[in-house]
Length: 228
Image (cartoon, rainbow, N blue to C red; front, side):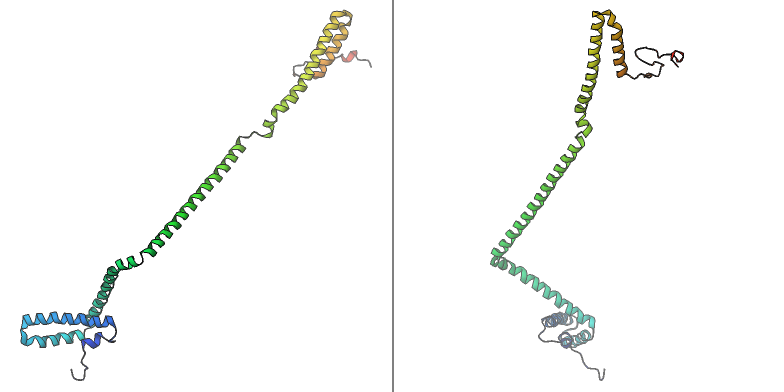
């Protein structure tokens, strides 16, 4: 078309002549162009190869999708070259830095071992504290209260008092019996002493609720017997 500036694939792909990806994208285009030349030669013959290549060139230069395809292929190729270069260089890199790599690995292992040991120590300490607290709780649960711990002493005191009273009663009874045996005239006095002792040990009022006023069976004086 008249007045329209002609486009060239090189100028469309290479905006900076020192940019490697751009130069590589154009190199990929040239490789593709060579393949198309062989195709045109086989299909149309040598006479039409140049004409067909020019038509193909113009279609690529004016098609953004074709241009982006070459740019993408260039990026992929560069990544593959970088990966291959690193893989080829790794043995030499490892050999040159093997000492430093080994030192780092050993330091990392020591750090990991220390962390594991700290974790084990913390777990052991927690278990020990838990055991102590559990034992203390168990002792407090099984330890008798004050009244249980002192019940024996309390019973001894009470028992001693009761035994003293009963012992006094028994001793008095024996004395009364001996007095009655020695001198029958003292029998009334002995009975009076015995009654007094029993009434002191047991209440004079009805202790059974059955109308028994005294365990000595002595009847209180009737109202009409009392002096005015």
